Amino acid sequence: MVLWGIILVSHVVHRDTLRSLGLTFGEARESAQLVLPIALAFYVPLLAFGFARHVLAIVPLNWHALYSFLGYAVWCAFQQYLAQSYFHNRLMEAIHNRHLSSLLVGVIFGSAHIPNPILMVATTVAGFVFAEIFARHRNIWPIALAQAVGGLLLAAVSPASLMHNMRVGPGYLFYGLR
Image 1 (cartoon, rainbow, N blue to C red):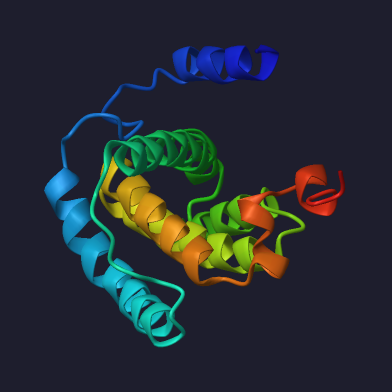
Image 2: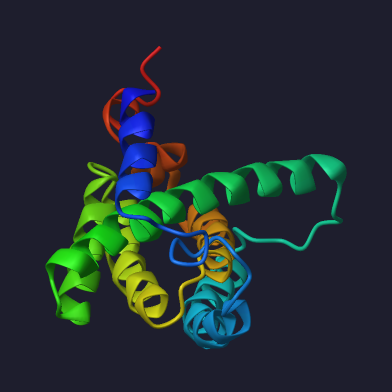
């Protein structure tokens, strides 16, 4: 709660607006137009791999699946809020090279997923790409949706022995030890 308070105070001190934080729907269309083709470039091979290896199957949609997806999407939106609205905004104030600040956001985002090898690679790359998009179009919503779909798809096709149910930190290390 202390860290959350510091972030909120930082928003006040820096006079951030909902628009500058990417929390409005302004530029959502422009952001989505950049996110969609990039996301599809990652999703299509993952889908093909998943169906070819018989680890993916089309199942009827039910309330439990929808509720689980929405819960994960909210978590992804919070992650993008921290990565883009907070860290990237602060880095763009300090580092005037947008690409360098985006690279640092990617590294920070990937580092938050240590020691999960699959998530570290995926989130470092995605973090950089999402930061580049956010720097152009301040909107976290298409980015968060792309992360939610991509994260679940990656989890579905990745070996459980490496993914550890998408755990990071100590939870990854102690996964399955009960």
